[in-house]
Length: 310
Image (cartoon, rainbow, N blue to C red):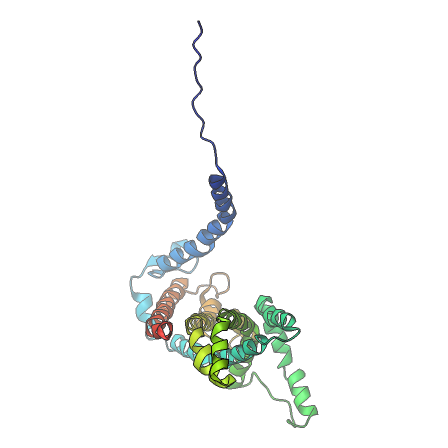
């Protein structure tokens, strides 16, 4: 009599396990890319902050805190950091009110609002380098702006928009606002559309006017989203880099460099001059990251009241 030997029970994959496996497979390229192109470069840069490193292995040596001590007496670095804050102060009070106004208009029940939403968002997905080249040509000495203003009689002679620091900074503000205001329009619009209609119906019954409803109801109910939008705008503005490099490249005389564009242009491997201490640039990047992180954490702490309005 033969005894049947049962095969070991094989674990069967259920639908849940299959979906989880598919999710991990789909996420794997992003995870690998994040580790290779974000985490590894950060660790490498932090490590090199304590070294003299110019790309030549034989010249590399440990210098301890020397790079950081040199940094705190580097006037050029602190000037670029001041330029970054100036750029943020000039841009954010213009960009966010424009985005909010357009979001209010698009929130009305009008025809064609879908088309305008798409058009406002398109600059956000266009390459920063292309936008910079377009605005460089528009504000060129013989560009569209000067030609138009001369034609309508505002100017007698063309203006050198990149001849002084403040004029060049305003060109940067206009270009960066044009690129990024569209995404803020969508954020504001989404926040408005999440407000229950019952609230507005109650306001109509009470006889409240449109301005009263907007400032007393809509804005307070949007406060938590406004907190996030403002934080993202601050972080994005303080990290401005490519636009400056392509549009002005620091002109005139390096006076319009933001801190990120300055570090990238002067100390990034492959772009920096031969023999430049890249380790010093890494120390700059580390200190800058700590400053920006401190600003972000401080903002989150002192803006918590926006979540407690209602």
